[in-house]
Every structure is written in C-alpha cells, then in structure tokens.
Length: 205
Image 1 (tube, rainbow, N blue to C red):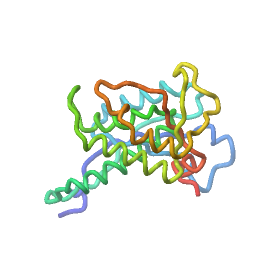
Image 2: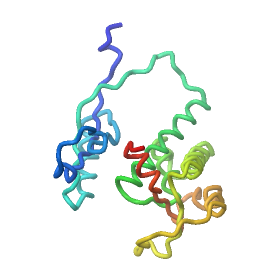
Image 3: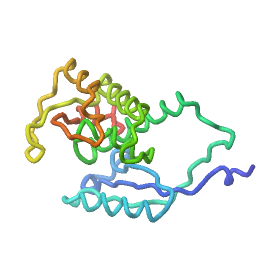
Image 4: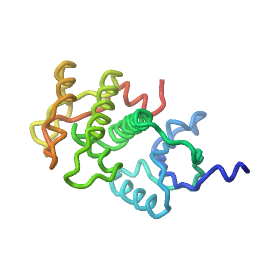
C-alpha cells in the first residue's frame, strides 16, 4: 500500500501565543504553538476556531486551523473494551488539562459530560463505562499532582486564589455520586491545574 493511502485528511485547531513573540524568536517553539485538537471537516474546525477566538479577549493568543494528515488504523483493528476504555481515559485527561491550562477551570461534573458528548449519549441514557472513564481520568490526574479540587460558594464569584481540598476530601468527591446524576446537577466543587499540571500541559519539564 502506498504511504499516502495510509492517511486520511484532518483539520487541526492550532493555538499561537502571539504575545510571546515580543521577545527574541525562540529556539524551542513548543511553548508558543499548541495543537488543541483535530476535526474531520474544515467546517467543524472553523466553527471551533471561531468559538475559541471569541473567548480570547486580550489579543495575546489566536486560533486557526491547518490541514493535516491522520494515519488510518488497520481495518482489522478492533479495540477491546479494556483497550478502548484506556484510550478514552487518556484522551479525557489530555482534554481536561488543555481546558484547565488554556481555557478555564472546570466543574467536577464536566469531564463526565465531555465523555457523554463524545459517545453521543441520549439525554436520559446512562452508561456506567462513561462514569468509570471520567472517574479514572480525574483520579489519575489528581494522584499525579496535575490537578486540585476546590469549593466555590458562588459560580458567579469564583475565588481569586482557590484553596485546594485536602487529598482525602478530594478523593471522596471524585468517587461521589452527585456529579453523575441525570439530568446534571452542577455542584460547588471545581477543578484547577496545579503548577506541575500547567508545566506538563505546556510541555515543560
């Protein structure tokens, strides 16, 4: 099979931190250009670019899309349930860290709803695997010291310097049932990136 036949077209959403270019041109571009995600159509990628650019109000960063090639998996590859779940956990961990570092903090329930969106669940459909994926991703990130949990008295007035929950309390919230309810019930526990988490997401050591 020719090498070109092993790929499909994709459309990568790319973030460029323009404000960093006020200094001398860097030797390492990894801290300046960030590939956020890949979509299968230009229309979807453009819509995401428009959404993200609308959120950026300081002019310091801009998003655009770039045509890319994505290697096609073998047609004979059928992931096992365990393999698929593990891949989804890693995908969710990357998505959560991207949102926390480059966008904003998340409610504890939001990673679960991201999984439901990916899986195209019906409004009242509940699948335990979705909950397990979200819980495992959150537990991994917390155990790795990449995120911390904190409480918010009012979502309209988040704390300037959130106080991390003790580890035992955070683990209890990650294992709790309230964020899995249908319909969703936003609570007072939120997620933020630790300094180690920010460095990890930006590819810094």
